Length: 185
View 1 (cartoon, rainbow, N blue to C red):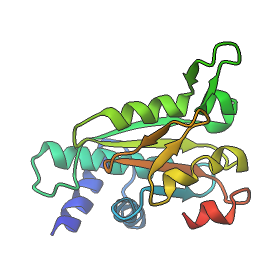
View 2 (cartoon, rainbow, N blue to C red):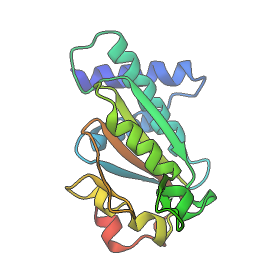
View 3 (tube, rainbow, N blue to C red):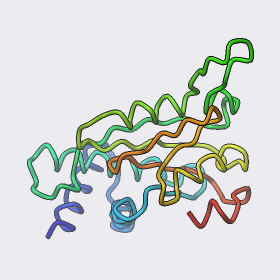
């Protein structure tokens, strides 16, 4: 029953987003929901214009609408999305850096976003979307986030434990540069 309720809301969400409703796409959005319920990190792989962004945005819209309607299934919660392109900035700007002069730590964009998400105490879902090509450097830092530890380890030795309501979503064209360790996670 909950699955058909979700599928019906996905159709309504796609319509509200002024998008064409295709049964195969509704199935893909539903599969993303199912995957998010068993995996902390998910990679959506496909070409530019293939519907990757639309799929997760439609799911977020549908889950938020179901939550606001008071649906009893606790998997349906309000969703907040933070999206960034990890290749548009340096590793220091992405994860943070320690000042060589005084040793002061400055968070990077990803560590700042993840830290803020980890501190929130609501049941709201937080999705951190990394939209850009997989690079062996930046993605390897995510391996401890994607394994059973669900912890972001920073260069200063700090560890940020992620909450069960958080998800990491990687929106990529291909996995050519991803290591087997990353893909298996």
